[in-house]
Image (cartoon, rainbow, N blue to C red; front, top):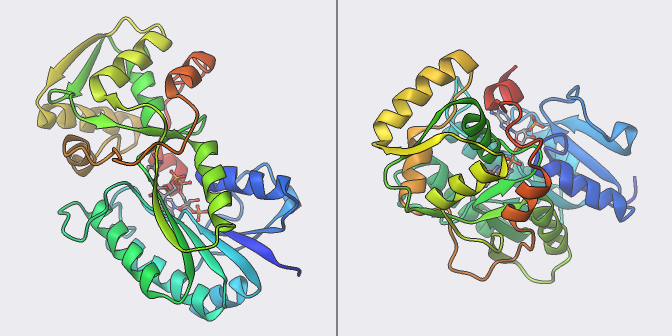
Length: 303
Ligand SMILES: NC(=O)c1ccc[n+]([C@@H]2O[C@H](COP(=O)([O-])OP(=O)(O)OC[C@H]3O[C@@H](n4cnc5c(N)ncnc54)[C@H](OP(=O)(O)O)[C@@H]3O)[C@@H](O)[C@H]2O)c1
């Protein structure tokens, strides 16, 4: 096989948009996936190989000959034996395999404001992996999005779903904390550009708007024509209500750590935006579809 690119998760969310862009450029694309049978749009244009972390030799041989590894693999929360700690270990196995296979470059999707000192396993785990990548012999580009939006999005879609479905929408705390969403295809463009950059680098990847959470909810509400009354409640009360809703929906809607990350203003960047698409415009154009149905993380990754 001629030089090719490998994506972990080309049948997933961000990975799908990266795959589309690579295929449009005429590149050969391989995906490493734990779910080769997942419905996808690519057919035989993307070859699926196993993402099995207990077989590092197989991973190495799957990566052998690859020019770039785009890594989107991660978990959103601890659930069963799929924990952050395990995801960190798994990703280390992947990085080592890429190094042994002499992959030229890794484009790794991280998160804004990762920190080794963070008490939040998501942000600490991402920081540990950034360190592991920097220590590896691989050339790297680390992109740090805050929140990603697009048709397959979960967070903003479900804000819209709750605004459409219930007469009351409760914002955790004062809602003054901010976030800077990036459009999924803008992130994919940055990832593909990053694969062709010369040097190794780390960069935030955020869109042009910076929303206070209050304003984000108001923008989504007006886009979908919601008449829900928007109120503020203590984070623990909102989380308890979401746990009950999650029981009926069969999902983990929002975790305590995710709320803590929001409240700590970790989903913003001090750098200039690198995404061009405005969420407000995108919401206007997609108002009929956003939040029309609930998007379940558990359904997507555990069923
Ligand atoms: N979505 C956001 O708003 C957001 C915000 C900031 C940063 N990020 C980061 O951006 C990257 C891509 O995010 P995404 O939302 O596009 O991810 P995604 O497509 O939902 O997941 C990426 C891949 O990770 C694997 N995966 C996800 N959850 C898993 C689980 N519970 N157990 C086993 N494998 C799992 C899946 O691989 P398989 O092919 O094996 O199923 C999936 O294709 C991630 O590293 C994430 O941390 C995302």
